[in-house]
Amino acid sequence: MDSEPDGSCERVDEQDMVSAMSVEVECVASRLVDHLAIEHSSLVSSCVQKIAVLTGAGVSAESGIPTFRGEGGLWRTWNATELATPEAFRESPSLVWEFYHYRRCVVAKSLPNASHYALAVLQQRCEQEGKEFTLLTQNIDGLHAQAGSTDFVELHGSLWKTRCCHCNDVRVNRDMPICAALDGKGAPDPKTTDAGIKPMDLPRCKQCNGLLRPHVVWFGEALESRVLRQVDSALQNCDLLLVAGTSALVYPAAGYVPLVSALGGVVAEFNIEDTPASRSCRFKFRGPSACTIPQALGISLGQLPQAPSSSDSSA
Ligand code: BV8
Ligand code: ZN
Image 1 (cartoon, rainbow, N blue to C red):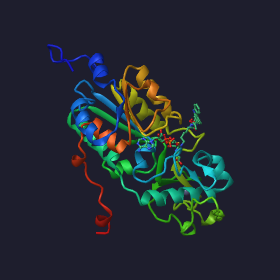
Image 2: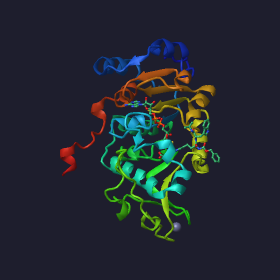
Image 3: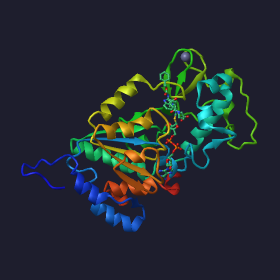
Image 4: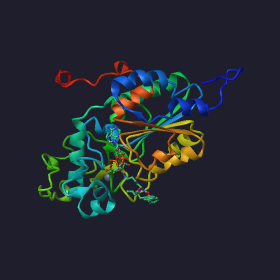
């Protein structure tokens, strides 16, 4: 990174970056640690003043949470895009609550992985260095918060919040099960018969006893205007966008990569394979994100807070 005599340097020194990084990085842990630590610790170089990160289900895959399109993306005979809709909830609130109860059970047993921790460390670093940093996640699992990320934007809501269909009261709810009728329900096996729970026995609002729904954005529903404003301010004049673990197929999030690239920002993609977003990405880090994200950020795993191992959790 050549600096100008006055110390300022041209935004993202094209040639250096391209020549230094025009290799698709295969994530072969040991060999790469040295390589990346040397080569890429400048991914977030002094020229980069405004950083945004967009994450998807792939960053939680190594925490044991099935992605939407990967292995385990099907629940019973349904794929998530069919059940995560207002129509499905209108037709069978019991079935949809079984689906979300199952996901709450899976996530409740999961811990953040190095992807989540490295992004929390990146946020701290950026704040120390006076850089603007915004984490945008499509994930509703809350693992970014558990890893120490703060003020991040949950584009599609949270598994751990409910909203009343009658009075719109929104509140955090970590009760497991969220209501007695769902206890032991939600099994993903296609042979499982739907519980057919009566609406009065499903989660009810403490304010008005109305039917509660998960406080998530379903397909066909708009994102909250507050969230859209936060996205806007994060992506305007964004120097560097890190996009991790997303298939870039669901909008509006899938549009953020080409947008930043079109606005002259640099995009780095972390994924185990190419996606429709890859063509807008200057850097492609291929491999499991719990490996590639810490390396590309020059964060050695030793620096990451270790998720308490199972023996600790019993403490
Ligand atoms: C809306 C919450 C409008 C609920 C979710 C334009 C074109 C086409 C369609 C549309 C369009 N605009 C709108 C649409 C319709 C729709 C849409 O995009 N449909 C798609 C399917 C084509 N969008 C909407 O409906 C949105 N709303 O547009 O409203 C509107 C406006 C005004 C008024 C009324 C309406 C709402 C979209 C949000 C839906 N809710 N989630 C819930 O979770 O239950 S979306 C949900 O699915 C997730 O949040 C996420 O966004 C998406 C899943 O995608 P990913 O997270 O990327 O996961 P996926 O499994 O697909 O991929 C994982 C990736 O990780 C893979 O690439 C894999 O290779 C990689 N990977 C795996 N392991 C690893 C890894 N990478 C690294 N390391 C690993 N270890
Ligand atoms: Zn209510």
